[in-house]
Amino acid sequence: MDPLLELTAEIRARAPRLLKPGTSQLLGCTQGHGLIRDASGLHHRVLEHIGLPHGPWDLSPLIDHTLLKAEATGSQVEALCAEALTHGFASVCVNPMWVPLAASLLQGGPVRTCTVVGFPLGASALRAKAFEAESALRDGAQEIDMVLAIGAAKAGDWETVMEDFMAVRAAVPAPVVLKVILETCLLSEAGKVRACELAMEAGLDFVKTSTGFSTGGATGADVALMRRTVGHSLGVKASGGIRTYEAALQMVMAGATRLGLSASVAVVQGGAGSGAY
Image (cartoon, rainbow, N blue to C red; front, side, top):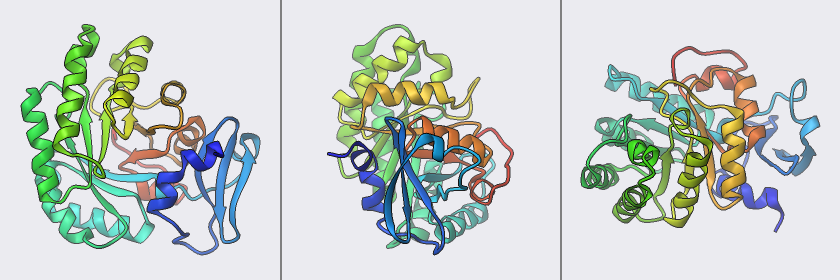
């Protein structure tokens, strides 16, 4: 199978057509090429013809429009959902208490409801993390971003890491999309690779860089490492500190197929946002 078609299968199934006439979407990059979609169909391009100053490309189908601040309000979640529907983002990502509201606003539409569990430390009791995911699913979540048991990973206790993965996967079986946040700024390169390998073994759907609440966010090097490790079998989500179109483009060119952004609207409009996520 064409590697680019394999890499972008989830995106094309979820968003099968252009939302905004006259735009060209960048759906994914691998092996030195990217896949562009416009009104005439799908096109392969070498990366040299995708990076700046080429484009700008519409990245909307890759974006999880995110609001995870403790002080978030219901009216802000409502605005988040409206923006996601307007721009054709992949999902809105909110804290668990806001899942029922977001799910009610997005019900029946193309934008998914995403939430986080064990957030932002990953240090919840394993049964609590699995219950939190199951509860979010009952409330209407369609995607779950769980935080890695970071301390266990750093200690080399990969049995506990795998137990955590399996418990949450059992609580939210496919077709619910399950992502694991590695908090890459806290792991060694070997630790990142091993966590990605176990995510594949446990049947997770995505590996993700960062919570946006630790000592660092997404880097192109980490995204590329994660993509090399999982191949085309899992998605890679870059999140944390991506505030400009240029930074978002860098992550997609490195192999990301999702972007966790709070500055989503500014990014797709070519501007810049603020904030940690």
